[in-house]
Length: 86
Figure (cartoon, rainbow, N blue to C red):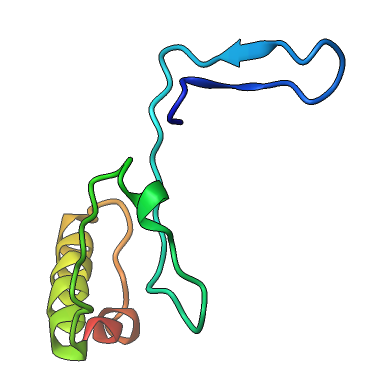
């Protein structure tokens, strides 16, 4: 990433230049001794999102499911299925 490419290890060991590449990465919080070095992290914009509470998750997904049940006109869901949003 620092040098816009890499050297092939086999054959003539020529430099392979990367052109028009965008790197995107995601990870969960590190556990134990698995850390990411600052040398590697500096290539990215780091965004941290606090984990949602259960109440927040219920509100978010409850609203999505309620919208889905109301928007569905071709098939009607039974009350047992609709109660799963709570």
